[in-house]
Amino acid sequence: MPDHSRRGELHMVKRPQAMTMSAAPLPSSADLARYLESRGELGKPWMWHLLRLAKLKEAKDSLEPLEYLERLQEAHADLMKLGEFWKGREAEVFGGQYTPSQLLEPLPGSPDDR
Image (cartoon, rainbow, N blue to C red; front, side, top):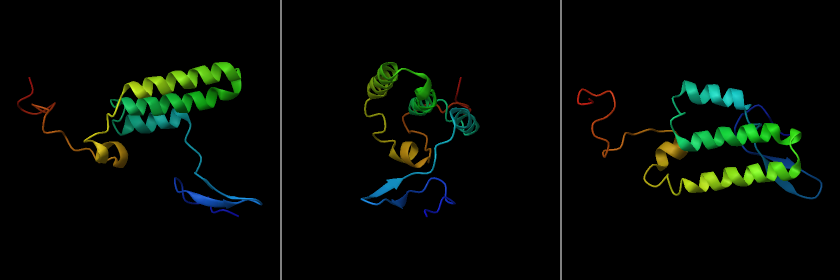
């Protein structure tokens, strides 16, 4: 029996014919939105895509298969329009460690901000 006590960690699930990896269940879109808002993450376009995918996953059972596929393809196309947005921002995007860019002058809210 797998241990579900650790959220967000991958664990192995033994199946009769294969070993597979599964992740802890994702939060609801409402929980995710509240979490992103509380952390000030809603200004990041990739977080909007994450929220969009969470909402799409929740709506999957109420959509026709073709409509679901079309919406998923639209979401993928929009995400690809962001390009390689993470270049030079790996710690912020993948590690949650925000460091203001040295190129932003002045920093919002700083004494030099107009």
